[in-house]
Length: 178
Image 1 (cartoon, rainbow, N blue to C red):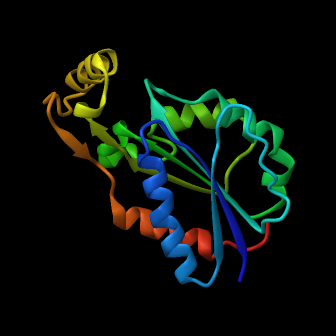
Image 2 (image 1 turned 90 degrees about the horizontal axis):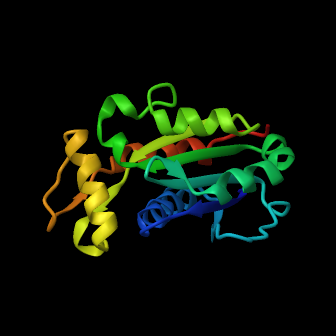
């Protein structure tokens, strides 16, 4: 049994929902899992954990800046232990955009950091138009219109492939020492 920490950055809460599902999958494999939200100025000690997972959502084409900062502050620890990264974004609603080589946001993020995660997951996120304020709703609808996505301002659209989330959780649970 290993102890796993899942550090996540979320905008609207869907990344946390994915983390909760991953925790269930990983705990069924006999591991203990702690979930910790990464916020600006967070000081999270990864030392006590045997495995590390970092999850982050995308908004307007970028992960929050604290994600890259956290990775860089902890790069030695991430390299020394079994670790994984996952991204949650609406472009991953398209199956051909769920690979690190084809997802533009993940590709750009990985080039900007000095850690090469050995396990990477990319999951479709959720668009909840009624929850957004005017500016976000308008911007996201425009982006969806440009990329042929859903634009109904009253709609809630979840793009997450939960089987892929479960498979990622299985990989995390079976990661061996770095």
